[in-house]
Length: 318
Image (tube, rainbow, N blue to C red; front, side, top):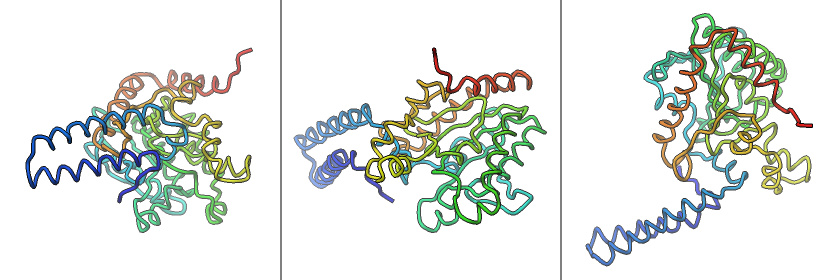
Protein backbone atom coordinates (compact mmCIF):
# COMPACT_ATOMS: atom_id res chain seq x y z
CA UNK A 1 0.00 0.00 0.00
CA UNK A 2 1.45 3.35 -1.06
CA UNK A 3 0.96 6.46 1.06
CA UNK A 4 2.53 9.77 0.06
CA UNK A 5 2.75 12.51 2.65
CA UNK A 6 2.10 16.06 1.45
CA UNK A 7 5.59 17.37 2.20
CA UNK A 8 7.17 14.39 0.39
CA UNK A 9 5.34 14.96 -2.92
CA UNK A 10 8.19 16.92 -4.63
CA UNK A 11 10.56 14.05 -3.77
CA UNK A 12 8.12 11.39 -5.01
CA UNK A 13 7.64 13.30 -8.27
CA UNK A 14 11.42 13.48 -8.80
CA UNK A 15 11.82 9.77 -8.09
CA UNK A 16 9.03 8.94 -10.56
CA UNK A 17 10.91 10.94 -13.21
CA UNK A 18 14.10 9.02 -12.40
CA UNK A 19 12.23 5.70 -12.76
CA UNK A 20 10.96 6.74 -16.19
CA UNK A 21 14.46 7.68 -17.34
CA UNK A 22 15.80 4.35 -16.04
CA UNK A 23 13.23 2.51 -18.15
CA UNK A 24 14.44 4.42 -21.23
CA UNK A 25 18.04 3.66 -20.31
CA UNK A 26 17.26 -0.07 -20.13
CA UNK A 27 15.47 0.00 -23.48
CA UNK A 28 18.16 2.08 -25.19
CA UNK A 29 21.43 2.57 -23.26
CA UNK A 30 22.81 6.10 -23.53
CA UNK A 31 25.79 7.67 -21.73
CA UNK A 32 24.17 11.10 -21.69
CA UNK A 33 20.99 9.65 -20.18
CA UNK A 34 23.03 7.74 -17.59
CA UNK A 35 24.70 10.99 -16.53
CA UNK A 36 21.33 12.71 -16.30
CA UNK A 37 20.00 9.90 -14.08
CA UNK A 38 23.05 10.14 -11.80
CA UNK A 39 22.55 13.92 -11.43
CA UNK A 40 18.87 13.50 -10.66
CA UNK A 41 19.61 10.84 -8.05
CA UNK A 42 22.00 13.23 -6.34
CA UNK A 43 19.27 15.90 -6.39
CA UNK A 44 16.78 13.42 -4.93
CA UNK A 45 19.14 12.49 -2.09
CA UNK A 46 19.86 16.17 -1.40
CA UNK A 47 16.12 16.96 -1.38
CA UNK A 48 15.43 14.02 0.96
CA UNK A 49 18.07 15.19 3.44
CA UNK A 50 16.80 18.78 3.23
CA UNK A 51 13.17 17.79 3.90
CA UNK A 52 14.02 15.58 6.84
CA UNK A 53 16.52 17.99 8.40
CA UNK A 54 13.76 20.52 9.08
CA UNK A 55 10.68 18.46 9.88
CA UNK A 56 8.03 20.16 11.99
CA UNK A 57 6.40 18.34 14.93
CA UNK A 58 3.22 17.90 12.86
CA UNK A 59 5.16 16.35 10.00
CA UNK A 60 6.77 13.92 12.45
CA UNK A 61 3.29 12.99 13.69
CA UNK A 62 2.32 12.22 10.10
CA UNK A 63 5.41 10.03 9.66
CA UNK A 64 4.66 8.22 12.95
CA UNK A 65 1.27 7.23 11.51
CA UNK A 66 2.55 6.13 8.09
CA UNK A 67 0.81 2.96 6.98
CA UNK A 68 4.09 1.38 5.83
CA UNK A 69 5.95 2.11 9.06
CA UNK A 70 7.15 -1.06 10.86
CA UNK A 71 4.74 -2.15 13.58
CA UNK A 72 5.34 -4.11 16.78
CA UNK A 73 5.17 -7.56 15.18
CA UNK A 74 7.47 -6.40 12.36
CA UNK A 75 10.07 -5.47 14.96
CA UNK A 76 9.47 -8.76 16.80
CA UNK A 77 10.29 -10.61 13.57
CA UNK A 78 13.30 -8.45 12.69
CA UNK A 79 14.83 -7.95 16.15
CA UNK A 80 14.14 -11.27 17.86
CA UNK A 81 15.49 -14.75 17.20
CA UNK A 82 12.09 -16.06 18.27
CA UNK A 83 8.78 -14.78 19.59
CA UNK A 84 6.30 -17.07 21.34
CA UNK A 85 3.02 -15.20 21.78
CA UNK A 86 0.83 -15.84 24.82
CA UNK A 87 -2.86 -14.99 24.99
CA UNK A 88 -5.54 -13.96 27.44
CA UNK A 89 -5.81 -11.89 30.62
CA UNK A 90 -7.31 -14.80 32.69
CA UNK A 91 -10.32 -12.60 33.48
CA UNK A 92 -12.26 -11.75 30.31
CA UNK A 93 -10.37 -12.72 27.17
CA UNK A 94 -7.60 -11.86 24.76
CA UNK A 95 -6.82 -8.57 22.99
CA UNK A 96 -5.27 -8.68 19.51
CA UNK A 97 -4.31 -5.00 19.80
CA UNK A 98 -1.73 -5.98 22.46
CA UNK A 99 0.42 -8.96 21.40
CA UNK A 100 2.74 -10.23 24.14
CA UNK A 101 4.99 -13.17 24.79
CA UNK A 102 8.51 -14.51 25.28
CA UNK A 103 11.30 -13.53 22.91
CA UNK A 104 15.08 -13.65 22.57
CA UNK A 105 16.44 -10.13 22.08
CA UNK A 106 20.13 -10.39 21.27
CA UNK A 107 21.76 -12.01 24.28
CA UNK A 108 18.71 -11.62 26.50
CA UNK A 109 15.60 -13.71 26.98
CA UNK A 110 12.81 -11.16 27.50
CA UNK A 111 9.08 -10.67 27.78
CA UNK A 112 8.03 -8.58 24.77
CA UNK A 113 4.83 -6.52 24.88
CA UNK A 114 3.44 -3.92 22.49
CA UNK A 115 0.60 -2.35 20.55
CA UNK A 116 -0.13 -3.70 17.08
CA UNK A 117 -1.90 -1.79 14.28
CA UNK A 118 -3.13 -3.05 10.92
CA UNK A 119 -2.36 -2.06 7.34
CA UNK A 120 -5.75 -2.76 5.79
CA UNK A 121 -9.37 -2.72 6.94
CA UNK A 122 -9.48 -6.41 7.85
CA UNK A 123 -6.28 -6.26 9.89
CA UNK A 124 -7.23 -2.98 11.55
CA UNK A 125 -10.54 -4.48 12.67
CA UNK A 126 -8.64 -7.45 14.09
CA UNK A 127 -6.13 -5.18 15.86
CA UNK A 128 -8.71 -2.51 16.77
CA UNK A 129 -6.52 0.13 15.08
CA UNK A 130 -3.89 -0.36 17.79
CA UNK A 131 -6.22 0.80 20.58
CA UNK A 132 -6.16 -1.77 23.35
CA UNK A 133 -9.08 -2.86 25.53
CA UNK A 134 -8.83 -3.45 29.30
CA UNK A 135 -8.00 -7.10 28.55
CA UNK A 136 -4.87 -5.99 26.70
CA UNK A 137 -3.51 -4.08 29.68
CA UNK A 138 -4.40 -6.88 32.09
CA UNK A 139 -2.74 -9.42 29.78
CA UNK A 140 0.34 -7.19 29.61
CA UNK A 141 0.53 -7.01 33.41
CA UNK A 142 0.06 -10.78 33.70
CA UNK A 143 3.11 -11.30 31.51
CA UNK A 144 5.08 -8.60 33.32
CA UNK A 145 4.52 -10.43 36.60
CA UNK A 146 5.63 -13.63 34.89
CA UNK A 147 8.79 -11.82 33.78
CA UNK A 148 9.37 -10.70 37.35
CA UNK A 149 8.87 -14.25 38.63
CA UNK A 150 11.45 -15.67 36.23
CA UNK A 151 13.84 -12.69 36.47
CA UNK A 152 13.39 -11.71 32.82
CA UNK A 153 13.66 -8.11 31.57
CA UNK A 154 10.65 -6.55 29.86
CA UNK A 155 10.67 -4.78 26.48
CA UNK A 156 7.60 -2.67 25.72
CA UNK A 157 6.95 -1.31 22.20
CA UNK A 158 4.42 1.53 22.27
CA UNK A 159 2.38 2.45 19.17
CA UNK A 160 -1.18 3.55 19.85
CA UNK A 161 -3.38 6.60 19.28
CA UNK A 162 -4.82 5.83 22.75
CA UNK A 163 -6.70 3.16 24.68
CA UNK A 164 -10.05 2.15 23.18
CA UNK A 165 -12.75 4.62 24.31
CA UNK A 166 -15.78 2.46 23.49
CA UNK A 167 -18.69 1.63 25.80
CA UNK A 168 -17.55 -1.98 26.28
CA UNK A 169 -14.08 -0.87 27.36
CA UNK A 170 -15.60 1.59 29.82
CA UNK A 171 -17.90 -1.12 31.20
CA UNK A 172 -14.88 -3.36 31.77
CA UNK A 173 -13.07 -0.47 33.47
CA UNK A 174 -10.35 0.67 31.06
CA UNK A 175 -9.32 3.54 33.35
CA UNK A 176 -8.77 1.19 36.30
CA UNK A 177 -6.80 -1.25 34.14
CA UNK A 178 -4.39 1.48 33.01
CA UNK A 179 -4.11 3.07 36.47
CA UNK A 180 -3.41 -0.34 38.02
CA UNK A 181 -0.66 -0.96 35.46
CA UNK A 182 0.95 2.39 36.28
CA UNK A 183 1.21 1.46 39.94
CA UNK A 184 2.29 -2.12 39.42
CA UNK A 185 4.90 -1.32 36.76
CA UNK A 186 6.50 1.19 39.12
CA UNK A 187 7.00 -1.68 41.59
CA UNK A 188 8.26 -4.39 39.21
CA UNK A 189 11.52 -5.89 40.46
CA UNK A 190 12.91 -6.53 37.00
CA UNK A 191 14.31 -4.20 34.30
CA UNK A 192 11.83 -2.54 31.93
CA UNK A 193 12.74 -0.83 28.64
CA UNK A 194 9.95 1.02 26.81
CA UNK A 195 10.24 2.36 23.27
CA UNK A 196 7.72 4.58 21.49
CA UNK A 197 7.98 3.21 17.94
CA UNK A 198 5.16 5.28 16.40
CA UNK A 199 2.27 6.94 18.15
CA UNK A 200 2.42 7.36 21.92
CA UNK A 201 -1.08 8.53 22.72
CA UNK A 202 -2.27 9.40 26.23
CA UNK A 203 -2.94 6.76 28.91
CA UNK A 204 -3.05 4.08 26.24
CA UNK A 205 0.70 4.54 25.84
CA UNK A 206 1.44 5.03 29.54
CA UNK A 207 -0.32 1.77 30.41
CA UNK A 208 2.77 -0.13 29.24
CA UNK A 209 5.18 2.81 29.40
CA UNK A 210 6.47 2.95 32.99
CA UNK A 211 10.09 1.88 32.55
CA UNK A 212 13.67 2.16 33.73
CA UNK A 213 14.67 3.39 30.28
CA UNK A 214 12.21 5.21 27.98
CA UNK A 215 13.35 5.61 24.37
CA UNK A 216 11.70 6.99 21.23
CA UNK A 217 12.19 6.42 17.55
CA UNK A 218 13.29 9.64 15.86
CA UNK A 219 9.93 10.31 14.18
CA UNK A 220 7.61 9.02 16.90
CA UNK A 221 5.50 11.21 19.16
CA UNK A 222 4.46 10.89 22.82
CA UNK A 223 1.70 13.09 24.18
CA UNK A 224 -1.15 13.37 26.67
CA UNK A 225 -3.52 14.06 23.76
CA UNK A 226 -3.42 13.87 19.97
CA UNK A 227 -2.79 17.14 18.06
CA UNK A 228 -6.29 16.87 16.55
CA UNK A 229 -7.88 16.40 19.97
CA UNK A 230 -5.97 19.35 21.40
CA UNK A 231 -6.92 21.54 18.42
CA UNK A 232 -10.60 20.60 18.78
CA UNK A 233 -10.53 21.71 22.43
CA UNK A 234 -8.45 24.89 22.16
CA UNK A 235 -9.25 26.13 18.64
CA UNK A 236 -12.59 24.33 18.14
CA UNK A 237 -11.33 22.86 14.85
CA UNK A 238 -8.99 20.03 13.86
CA UNK A 239 -7.38 22.16 11.13
CA UNK A 240 -5.21 23.71 13.84
CA UNK A 241 -3.51 20.36 14.55
CA UNK A 242 -0.10 21.64 13.28
CA UNK A 243 -0.15 24.49 15.84
CA UNK A 244 -1.26 22.06 18.55
CA UNK A 245 1.59 19.66 17.69
CA UNK A 246 4.06 22.52 18.06
CA UNK A 247 2.60 23.62 21.40
CA UNK A 248 2.36 20.12 22.89
CA UNK A 249 6.15 19.50 22.65
CA UNK A 250 5.40 15.92 21.64
CA UNK A 251 8.40 15.15 19.43
CA UNK A 252 11.30 12.98 20.56
CA UNK A 253 13.62 15.97 20.26
CA UNK A 254 11.50 18.15 22.57
CA UNK A 255 10.89 15.35 25.08
CA UNK A 256 14.58 14.49 25.31
CA UNK A 257 15.40 18.15 25.98
CA UNK A 258 12.71 18.26 28.69
CA UNK A 259 14.01 15.09 30.34
CA UNK A 260 10.85 13.05 29.77
CA UNK A 261 12.63 10.37 27.73
CA UNK A 262 16.13 8.94 28.01
CA UNK A 263 17.17 8.65 24.39
CA UNK A 264 16.29 8.95 20.70
CA UNK A 265 16.78 6.06 18.24
CA UNK A 266 17.78 7.33 14.78
CA UNK A 267 15.72 6.28 11.77
CA UNK A 268 16.92 5.73 8.20
CA UNK A 269 16.77 8.71 5.84
CA UNK A 270 13.15 9.57 5.14
CA UNK A 271 11.76 7.63 8.10
CA UNK A 272 11.42 4.02 9.24
CA UNK A 273 8.84 3.27 6.55
CA UNK A 274 11.57 3.57 3.88
CA UNK A 275 13.80 0.85 5.36
CA UNK A 276 12.39 -1.61 7.91
CA UNK A 277 15.65 -3.52 8.28
CA UNK A 278 17.71 -0.43 9.09
CA UNK A 279 15.09 0.85 11.56
CA UNK A 280 14.97 -2.56 13.27
CA UNK A 281 18.78 -2.73 13.48
CA UNK A 282 18.87 0.67 15.22
CA UNK A 283 16.07 -0.33 17.60
CA UNK A 284 17.70 -3.67 18.43
CA UNK A 285 21.04 -2.01 19.17
CA UNK A 286 19.51 0.67 21.40
CA UNK A 287 17.40 -1.78 23.41
CA UNK A 288 20.30 -4.24 23.72
CA UNK A 289 22.51 -1.46 25.07
CA UNK A 290 19.84 -0.48 27.61
CA UNK A 291 19.38 -4.09 28.71
CA UNK A 292 23.12 -4.57 29.11
CA UNK A 293 23.20 -1.59 31.47
CA UNK A 294 20.07 -2.49 33.45
CA UNK A 295 20.17 -6.28 33.83
CA UNK A 296 23.22 -6.33 36.17
CA UNK A 297 21.53 -3.93 38.61
CA UNK A 298 19.88 -5.26 41.76
CA UNK A 299 16.12 -4.98 42.23
CA UNK A 300 16.37 -2.37 44.99
CA UNK A 301 18.70 -0.25 42.86
CA UNK A 302 16.30 -0.51 39.90
CA UNK A 303 13.34 0.57 42.02
CA UNK A 304 15.23 3.51 43.49
CA UNK A 305 16.38 4.77 40.09
CA UNK A 306 12.94 4.29 38.56
CA UNK A 307 11.32 6.29 41.35
CA UNK A 308 13.86 9.11 41.01
CA UNK A 309 13.46 9.26 37.21
CA UNK A 310 9.72 9.78 37.41
CA UNK A 311 9.86 11.95 40.53
CA UNK A 312 12.02 14.58 38.84
CA UNK A 313 9.69 14.99 35.83
CA UNK A 314 7.92 18.34 35.81
CA UNK A 315 10.36 20.03 38.17
CA UNK A 316 10.52 23.77 37.61
CA UNK A 317 13.69 25.67 38.45
CA UNK A 318 13.14 28.63 40.78
